[in-house]
Amino acid sequence: GAVVSQHPSRVICKSGTSVKIECRSLDFQATTMFWYRQFPKQSLMLMATSNEGSKATYEQGVEKDKFLINHASLTLSTLTVTSAHPEDSSFYICSARKPGYLQETQYFGPGTRLLVL
Amino acid sequence: KQEVTQIPAALSVPEGENLVLNCSFTDSAIYNLQWFRQDPGKGLTSLLLIQSSQREQTSGRLNASLDKSSGRSTLYIAASQPGDSATYLCAVRRSGGGADGLTFGKGTHLIIQP
Image 1 (cartoon, rainbow over the protein chains, first blue to last red):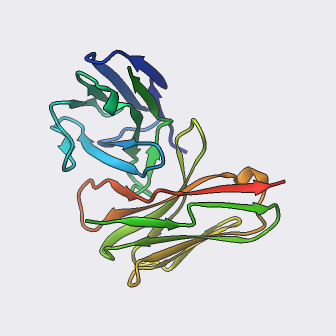
Image 2: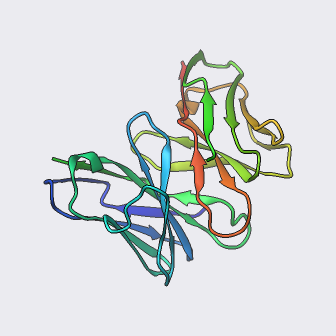
């Protein structure tokens, strides 16, 4: 199977600081990665689509200047939460689409739990 | 806007029982539908993927059906085991090409009692 990792798994930060979350596809190259956010007892919500070598596509209501996405290589996408506030506390999870057979399947990382104090 | 609803929100059954989880979606123009399981502190594991042209998919004790026209899918779990305890998520991919993400339901929290 395909493996996707995320780092860090948990992070606690002070309000106003920036936090970077990494998403890596360990055994395949992913031209497309996705970032989701999940609040308690809510659905996973797609935040943005990250395409290698181009700008990310953000879903409606997601501030692109607050959630910076960089997909600099075929195995790494980063999400930076800038000037984090307590309302940004959530579970952030990425996924990567594996090309080839069953390319429709997205492989998910283990997620990053962010707590902003 | 696509909305995905899962019923029930939670379910607790004794080991060995067969059970059905339900998923409905408001926009039938989907590319495919997937069922995932989510374990605490871990990522999502894909269980079954049904293309829009398919009616069902099977993997071991799991069987998923899709009725695209009515906007419904079910996940059938046979002979449930304690290890099946997890949150089960239903997700649909929008129709058309491009790199579309998934729209998820809130999930069904399943507990299988030993």
